[in-house]
Length: 319
Ligand SMILES: C[S@@+](CC[C@H](N)C(=O)[O-])C[C@H]1O[C@@H](n2cnc3c(N)ncnc32)[C@H](O)[C@@H]1O
Image (cartoon, rainbow, N blue to C red):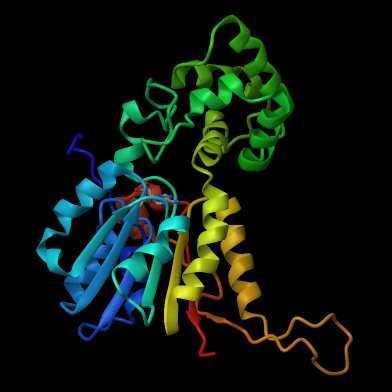
């Protein structure tokens, strides 16, 4: 593990303030579903010496990095390796937090140590193996997707997860090229993306391989499925008045979070036009961020990776 890679937590003050209400003491139990380097969590644990943390990450290197960073609070933390959708409830019950938790944080996507390490294969900026797994023990790599998926599945991935108009020609090019030589490296795939997409590049648009790499990464890590499952789980684990905060980095994630929070905050689910409410639905959340919180100019100067970050928060209502 290279310890030179660092991660600057995005929207750090805004997130911690939303999660904790700036409380500096008193019992406070939080799940950080995406521990990463422990940036947000360390702020919470330093701010409140009574705070306790359950930190989850599917990346073994992230757990090791965060354990070192959070060592100052070793007796107040439990760190678990695994994916948040399936680990959250299990871990909460294993550590005996029977009354639930005060806050849940999801800071989605990849961390700087993951994206900046060529060996992890997340970025087209470096040549490396086409890996892209957050969980390095999982069998599905990006190379496996490109070399073994049917053309129609590749089209679906590029269209749904990359929102690429050129999904069909890109998938066709992948299938043709892999017959000659299987995909092994990020550069190999980036060159194909460049060739297929170059004609349609708009001014100011991200470099062409960005969305193709995003699409593959989402598939390899089942990012949207994980998010959908975990949002439900998080709300059910929150105590009344507990806070859910989610930071997303692309529109597909943000759309899921926004719809989920709006749906849970709805006052009534009857079809429109009924004279009286018959649904008995009780809203489960109240939304704390009418519009998503985004990075200030000052933060963007320090950390360009905050550019796409959107923070949404909601409070669990009493039953
Ligand atoms: C953006 S980083 C979090 C950075 C962290 N907030 C900090 O300040 O250091 C996202 C982390 O979440 C992890 N992750 C993403 N999706 C996950 C999932 N479904 N289950 C568990 N961990 C996940 C990644 O491995 C990565 O380490």
